[in-house]
Image (tube, rainbow, N blue to C red; front, top):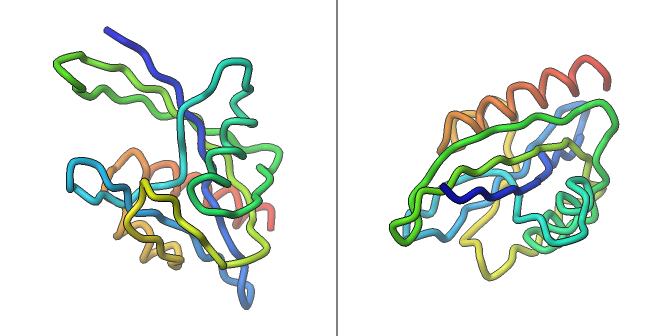
Length: 141
């Protein structure tokens, strides 16, 4: 089984004392699933460097991960008859703007309240990350 490692950031924007979360729509096999910004680690990069770079590439945002939060998810998927085990490391970070410029790899983006973002995310593992990120933010912010 092949292995892949990715990293990303749960991006939030605080407006009127409320958190809004950024979701992006991936353009994979015409599925158009909704998820969180993330991407593959490159040789010589740390996980946090990957998360920052991929978030910038996918959204145009400069987001710095906050200390004290990192969650990992794992899943397997099939690609060209190969089974791949993927590990994704997520951080949480605040954006100082809502002006997103999505990459060509994506179809759309949306800023949503926590409850709406939970409903919109396609995969349960992403929901779990958002649940933990929101809990982290509401206890420290």
